[in-house]
Length: 147
Image (cartoon, rainbow, N blue to C red; front, side):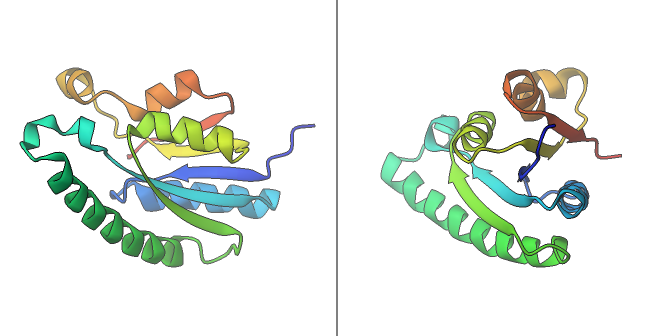
């Protein structure tokens, strides 16, 4: 029988993030599992059009990480009231790759994540982190649509 002990809940702090957290919390309660909440700050190589030098961007990135840490703490307090085994992590890089690497390194058994439900040109331009994770994940992925 499959044991689900570690659930990864990647979030972007958008309006769908509390809904994704609710699913992760419900599953964690039912399965006595841990929840790892993850937020990924894009890295320098994803923003070449900013025209910033790498050291300027690093300062910008440091500020973004500090803001995300505060937001993460509040997000966990507000959305994971009924479980105690929850941790938050802020990482930087390509979001899908970071999620997949984190899942592998932390022995994640299930990923719960939101989709933005983009279609057409927006989907082509922005891509889909969820789609990349679903296609490449070694563990099951539960996706939650925004509607």
